[in-house]
Length: 335
Ligand code: EPU
Image (tube, rainbow, N blue to C red; front, top):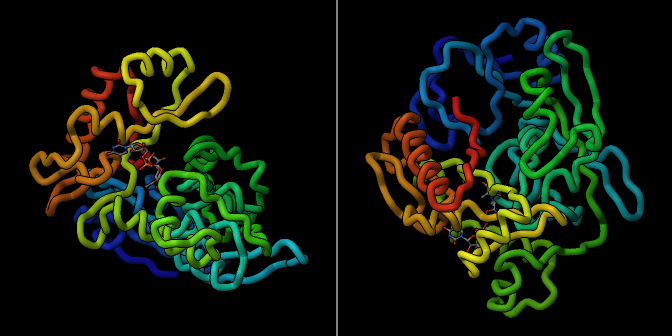
């Protein structure tokens, strides 16, 4: 187990905010997770790769992170492979491995920053796919007792960027492993965003999994800033789901408004589009800014404090509310 007092979190948040914590603990096995769980006192903060985290102050408490590695087949049939992965593995390295082995279903989730544990908490999603489509079960340690618990994906109540880990299970468990169910046959999902046009541009009619992964990676690189160059946490806001009534009244005003069908009663509206309409795209306030190619992404232009990013977030929220009557919610965990 790794345990450090007064530790800088600069390398542990992709916003590149220079904040520290009183104590930092990393567990590398189930047994270590049990030890951490049984000693843990509040306040504590469980982090993954720090790619969905905005630190606005030094954290006066314990920051806990998984360093559990490993990726192994637990069972397989002619059609499916169950793969159990340590929660501290880097997600995209695991997607690369799945693609390499011909285990399908994760291609559209390529290049999403963060750790494996976070895929189960956050239900990461992109290009029409979500982690919950492939998660089979999650293994974890109950913080109050140190008991090892396995839950089926169906019990995690997954929704758009939501799970029980963000609600009633928040701060209750340390995730140790996630088991994914991958397919041996490849049924690519190509009908989202500009995947098809990008494939066409490359003259590919029937992509292999490796080609699809490459296309997803290039689309993401084109639209999203590289956190190594400009600190950011991907989408800063969630796309709001609104009632059909609200959606129809907005559509009358903005016939070009992009939208995604949720169900009979609801429609999802891209927050990035609304922020863009409010004129925020590419703007800079102090050392914080809005990415020039995707208005949903707030960036650290260099040396920004978490507070500066939150002030920018509040100003954007207010403008979007005044114009569209929708209070967009941050997706990023603000501490
Ligand atoms: N749009 C604009 N201006 C912008 C940004 C977007 O007009 O500045 C419009 C686009 O033209 C498009 C629509 O809004 O019509 C949606 O944009 P995009 O396809 O880029 O996707 P998004 O809804 O903004 C979501 C995810 C991303 C994911 C993409 C692709 C959320 C909060 N974000 O973004 O996830 O990569 O779809 O699937 O759901 C992340 O979570 O960090 C992330 C990057």
